[in-house]
Length: 237
Image (spheres, rainbow, N blue to C red):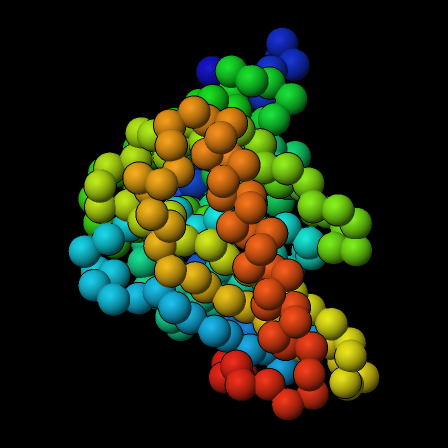
């Protein structure tokens, strides 16, 4: 049986499970914060989520407009939510950089529907197994140019939601960066309140569109909120 981080002889791309390591995760989190401080003028955080979080698990979903979206969950989890996290990452990236497994990433191969379904099931089982866990998911499936029209959410998230336990919250995560007022960009992060799951419906496409509309609306509102030079959002670091 081939190792999970290597190609098999038949050319298949086996699912790559997360094998998180606290030492590696702690080191990489500290390094990520150091890198963020060097990259951004300020990082701002507006958080509407957090009451009774110890009794909940969380599926964070949001827009995917920058490379940094892969790293900010580390900071949010370590310094704000303190859950046991997982994140979905493209198979090629996890295979090429195995250390991502050590910080809680598992693979998804969108080119293979059967393999992608296995990854989504893994995420469902992770969240449903016990409270205090989280999963970070960007349903656009790829980094998209923020200046272009939003990419629709893939229906996988709609399929997942109908199978999540009652203790799992769906929480929008909005991220935006701009150069408007300083030589370095500012990074703005907004964590919303849990979505009313009853209002979403049950059809996977309708649910995906419903969550997409939430992110689209919140992002547009958030950009307007953070555009003035003087803003009310707290500086995180």
